[in-house]
Length: 200
Image: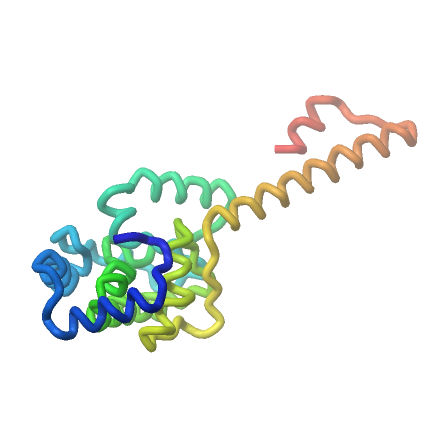
């Protein structure tokens, strides 16, 4: 199992094996858990947040919820500090990629549809993901399963968004510094404490 893209030939071969009922027993167990609980951990996913509408959503998934909740909390703190309001999506539910890589395409399709239905309800236009694997699933695997994301939705890796925010902040600080330099060159000046406060 992997969160990295698999060659199409391997995916197709696994799908044929699964369809013929020849997959290992462990695959059948995972399939049963995904169908019953929405994840391979055998634990019911929590109910979605009571959010009626959100411009931006953070895709959590099952692995981050069950094994890396600290990373989700850290991501939310960073988004809040950047002034980006957001909702959580697919909390505790698999994106469908695990099922897809195991050849369980019907299960993967059902999970993908559940995710899209939730995103439709939220009405978000930007979906932030925690990993390249999640981005690959939403952008490339879902279309292969015949599942389309809501129109005009942009899938963005969280690290890319934060990098852009940092670049913007750096640009702002540089403009502030250049303004102070220019003002001083023209014979003006500000109290150092005022300048420090303005940069916050």
